[in-house]
Length: 369
Image (cartoon, rainbow, N blue to C red; front, side):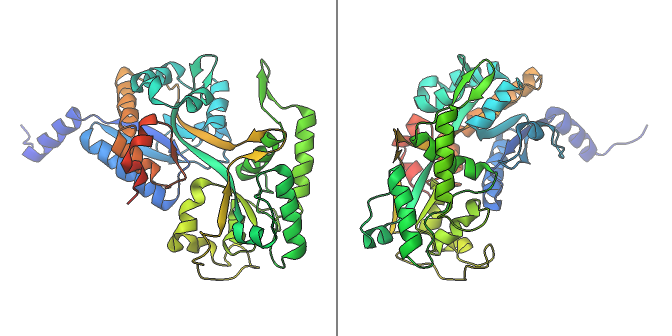
């Protein structure tokens, strides 16, 4: 009879005892510091759940929905995805989500635990297609010192924004009126919808899908084309924020994700070079930059309108076993633990906003280390 070592026996039984259940989590939070924070949380979860392994699948927010499911990677198709409500809605239309399971998780957490808005944005025909997780708000940042210099009103209306952009283009040498999107990407979509929403554009739907009112859309598109004439040069995306940070632009559409860049020189440094735009320079952080920056959240045209997005956790309908569903439920509930939830939000302080009511009263949410 062949002899087996004690180590072999221990290894054999340990693998039987902790047969791995793999969870594939898709996320667009792909910056090195974000992935490090996520991996830290996943390691903590796996430490107390040695039978479950969580793998990260990276995707770009401009990816088409079908490509995320079919994308080849080391782990196979994703089981969970953290995505905005529009992407989750598209998945829902394709009928690839496990709506029943998502509904059960929301009930387990408690519908009353969430703010109403995030819940509504992830619900269609009394069925949830995502568990509300975080949110973000897009705003118009502006150079308050320049607006004071030219005695301009706060740019919180459609007319005031266009007028200010024209003034700076004409009178402030070397300063563009505004930073906004001019490429076929998500950033341009966000900038346009913020302005178009203020002009009365709204998304409707029927049995054939989603649609806009053509006349309102055309009017908003004309306005956006006009405003583009006073924006930073080229087919710009979010990276054009460099112009704003180097005081070469008077206004900028950007989400609250920019808050740490505005306040912390080390983080702002990424925008204080000429590596992305040759017409810019290598400059130092200006200590008066933050105090001279204003913020507009609501723009008024034919109506008052704010723009943001709810990010939810989608669960794909992958014919999970009972054990896999239990593991998925355990992992999602882990993400909503107050300490874990705050750690996730603090990947982008001020950028990721809570959708859970209790976070508003949690002092730890306001104290990012």
